[in-house]
Length: 167
Image 1 (cartoon, rainbow, N blue to C red):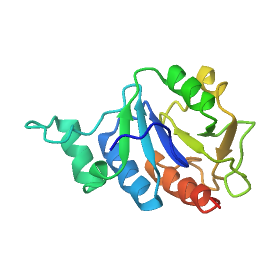
Image 2: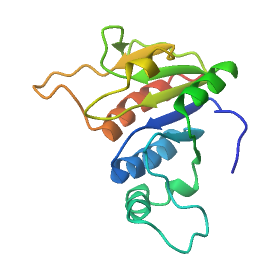
Image 3: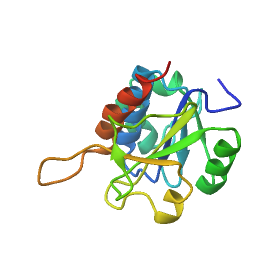
Image 4: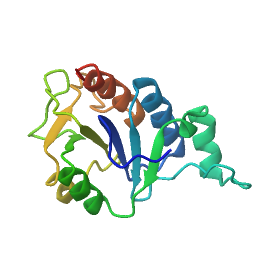
């Protein structure tokens, strides 16, 4: 199912190596009611409908998504920079889920819709050049020693909060 724009709430999954995390993000996006997922960088993609052969990564996505990859509209974007420019031109607010000195608490964030939530690489975060193209930065306060959550878990926490603010 193709849509021309991101809808009210889209997710950008950039440079997420784990296919299990990608599958989990699909499942959560379906549960939240997200309109679209953009897969960028080296993030693995689900199999195209009717594919006769599944790669190892596609099998992992299918296993954790539990079919959500068939219900959430998605596309593989070759350039995150071009994707962000396109979304912003369409009036979409791009918010990065990233620990940064400019980040606001996800509960305090007041989103402008339509919105695209950008998720990035777990150990390295989102590249500074990409962050410069974002309109907002949000984070989930961490109280433990590790100071981070798994990307799919963080998406669930922040995604449900953002979606709850759609009027």
